[in-house]
Length: 126
Image 1 (cartoon, rainbow, N blue to C red):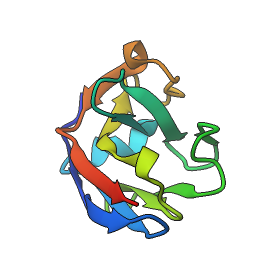
Image 2 (cartoon, one colour):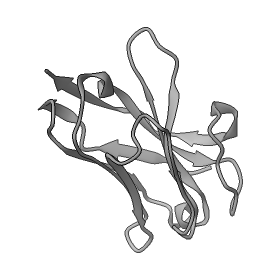
Image 3 (tube, rainbow, N blue to C red):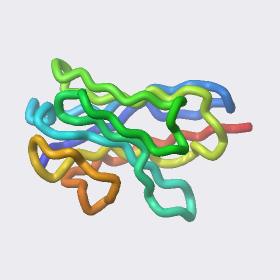
């Protein structure tokens, strides 16, 4: 498992942008698929996006496709989530997650996650 630390959350108006970062001190993060999940008040945590360990395979939830972009910089052992055209319904606590196994794919389910970050709050006002 790896230790993950998110940053970059904040409050923005609808239509604005934020970039979340997920950093790890261990270079072994580069061997894991990493994803982002979010949990809005009163709702279950949901999958947002994932990126393979090499960066060549990317997937998005339909709710964020075309607005959010996931990327990774393995030299910095950091994964990013660029969020554009934010909507009030994007308001949630955003979590970074790493796969259970090295060289895996990280599915959309919480059961696929081996390590979680502490979360970073994103609030979008109308």
